[in-house]
Length: 229
Image: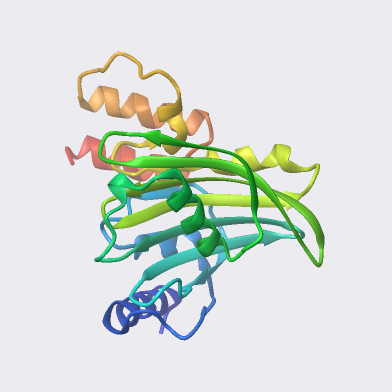
């Protein structure tokens, strides 16, 4: 069975049985993990290459797909967690922070700064904080979108004093429906442009130039636009 089929099987089993007994890691390509996300999970990351994909158990009935890419003490994580009983549009900041702590697996996060941005039918939690484990003191940052039945986004941490590189990962997160960076909503919105093939091509070229998407992703989207999809 290929790694992609293995991950798909994990997703199907979890949907059928609810939470699994514990995390089961599968080494596979980041793009392959994202290709089997539930349709409601539209946030993506342009990170490529091998990652460890997990199916962590958050609470009974949750579906969560998480991958981590670890480089020494540094860790980046991408997550999508959905549950039929979730209604996340009206979530408050305290609830959002607590949900993040469950996902990250770090119970003793000290969240030093966070905002919950209202995006109409969704809310975006942006946070930074610190925690300690047996390796030392760590600094972390993240951005999690709460909408409907799913929470999705990413977070990263590194040893205290090296947090300058964490923003680079958060800037790889984007909305696959619009090709816009997930954090773009923090800035004033530009004047809306007509949704034409030319405007969509310009958008993905901008994402490529800013290294938010890879050349492969750019080529795939360019072909899709030119085909009229």
